[in-house]
Image (cartoon, one colour):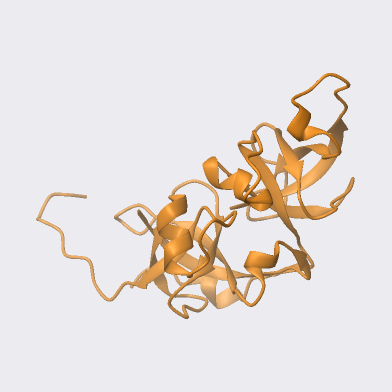
Length: 97
Length: 93
């Protein structure tokens, strides 16, 4: 999974019927400093995420398992809303061994 | 699979039911020489790893789900080992 921030949403009137009622969000991946890094991805929402929230998302075939046993055509799904990221400083300074 | 360093943990109250009770580790992938390789990722913890430890991470869904015993779940990465040592042929790095 990866950390990201919800920065927008996509509206499709015409879409695969299985996608009816599901939110399609724009997610900006974040780096270790919590800053935007890389290009935004489009992800389905499975947890009620909204604009401005930090989330984590799952990619690949596994992304559709958020609705198992329904077969949902998605390659990226938001699977959690992040409360906080806990990074002890010793873990970032200890780079060997 | 890849080698990484656990740099922290991520806390989420609102998440997929299949992630309940699972520790979410924030892992920095590493090159063989120990330097950072790309950006950190989030993996569920199957081996009770902690911050600062060097670990083995699977980045494939079936393996990750199996490791944490949550089949058919939206899980694409899991920490599946805590690395003691890595032996390399001379000149590999």
